[in-house]
View 1 (cartoon, rainbow, N blue to C red):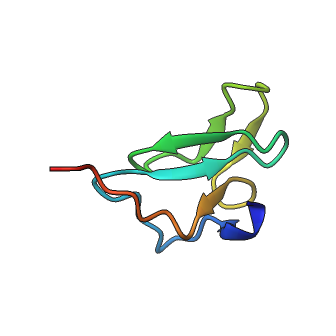
View 2 (view 1 turned 90 degrees about the vertical axis):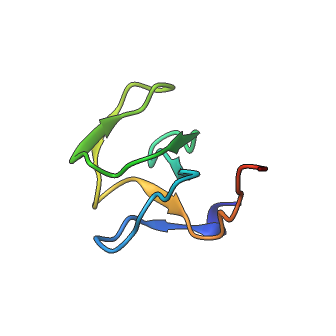
Length: 67
């Protein structure tokens, strides 16, 4: 599962349906709807990590809300 994730890059976008991100320390996944933050604290383990040097974003996340 972690092979589908990569470090967040400046060009990444969350999109309307959001993206899954993975904590670098505990590998817990969370869904986000914007990338307007510089650091984020994991709700599972409590570790704060910077956006570009820690968090991993799902590159294959193509889930869409049913209409």
